Length: 431
Image (cartoon, rainbow, N blue to C red; front, side):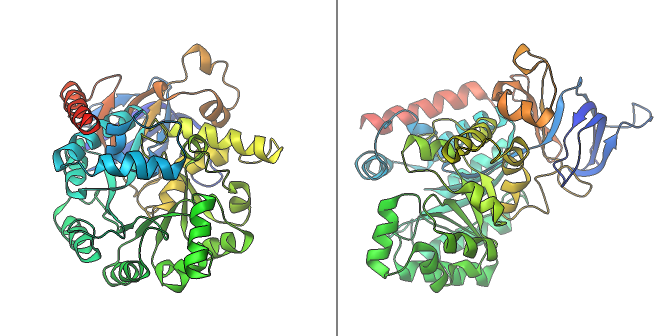
C-alpha cells in the first residue's frame, strides 16, 4: 500500500463551517485520505512519501466544472468576436480539420496548465473524446470526458456512438476517468437527439454535460422553435431526469432557477468566458440564495483564454458585486467553495472529491502565501480569492500522486507536449 503524508500545512478542508487548521497534516493510503487534522506526533519513517508543506495552504484540488480542453490549440486565434460569429465563422470551420492526435496533444497542453494552477479534475466536452481520455490517463489527472453531440450528425456525433464510447471508457479506464454524455445545447441538438441522450443516461447511469442559456439569441431561438424556455424544454424531453451539469446558465428567469435548484442540476458558472464573449451576467447570487448547486468552469482556452480556477473564483467574486451594486454578494468563502466542493457537486463527484475528508480521494494542492502580494495574512479565504495567483501553487496531487511540484512535472515531458501542441495549432489555423 502506498502511503503519503503531508505535514506542516495550513489546511482548508472546505467542509461546511470548517475553520483553517494551522500545523495540519494529511495522510493517504493508496490514494484515499486516511487522516486530516492537526499534526500528530509520529515516527517520520513510516511513509512511502512525506511532503513538508512549509506552512503553505493545503486545499482540495480545484475542480474545473466546464471546459473544452483541447481548445488550447485555438488560444488567441479568434478573440474579440460575438459568440455565434466566433463559433460559425472561426471555431467550427477550424475544428473540422481536427485529427485525434491534435486533441491528444491539445488536451495534454491544457493538463499542464491546470496542474500548474492547482486543478486536479475537469469536466470536458470535445471532439475525438477517446484521444482526450488517453491524454487524461497519461497525465494522471481526474477527468469527466464526453464527445460533443451536434445536430449535424456524422459518425463521430450520433448518440449511439457517444453511448458506446462512454460504456467502453467506463469499463476500461481507471476509476478517475468518469465518462458523460455531451449534447452541445438545446438549440444545436434535435429534440430526438436530446430524448435519446436522456434515455441513454438513465439506462446506463451516465451524467449529462450540456450548454444552457448562454446567450439571449439562443434562448430566443429555442423559444421560437419550441414555444418554451430552454429549461422547460429540457424538462419536457426528460433530460433533467438524469444528473445534469449545465454550463453558463446566464439567461434564466426566476422559475428556471427554481427548477434547476429543485432538480439538483449542477450549474457550471464561467464568468471570464461570459465576460469575454459579452454573453451577460449569470444570476449567481440568486442561484446561491435559492439553493442551486453552482461550481466554476473556465470554458475553453479559446474563449477565456486561461485555465486558471483561482482567477475564475476571483472574477466570480468581483463581477457580481459590481453588477449587483452590493459588495456582500458572492463572498470569498462562496467563491472558493465554487472552485472546490461546489464544482464537485456540480459534476456529481461530491462523494469523491471537493473537500479534504477521510474516505475521499487524495486530490489536493499546496498554495504558498509567502510572497509579498499575499502578506500580511489576515483572512485566509479572502487572501486566496482576492490576492493569490495561480503562480502561487507549489504542488498538485491526484490520488496521492504528485503530478506537479515547483515548476516540474514528474510524469510528463512538458517541453515535448508544448512543441507537439504548437505543431497541431499551426497546422489547424494555417490550413
